[in-house]
Image (tube, rainbow, N blue to C red; front, side, top):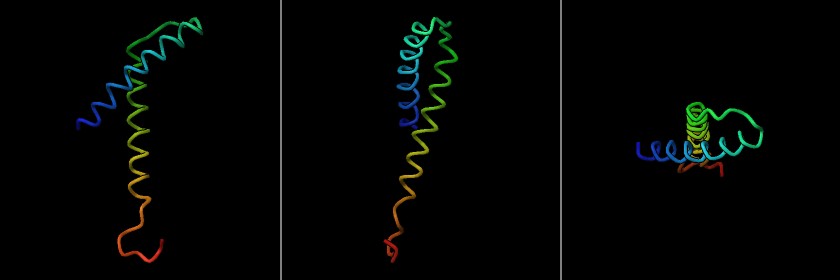
Length: 66
């Protein structure tokens, strides 16, 4: 659970910074609520997907296929 909260915290923080800079460069409105939610969801999907793929890429113990 703490790992997920850490991912959410840092993704919202980085998402806000990147969104602010990107909004200023593109001269768009800065919507901090939407940017934070999208960044958190994207980060959770990516990190959990990578963890799932990595955990299931190892062959089973005792398997002859190496």
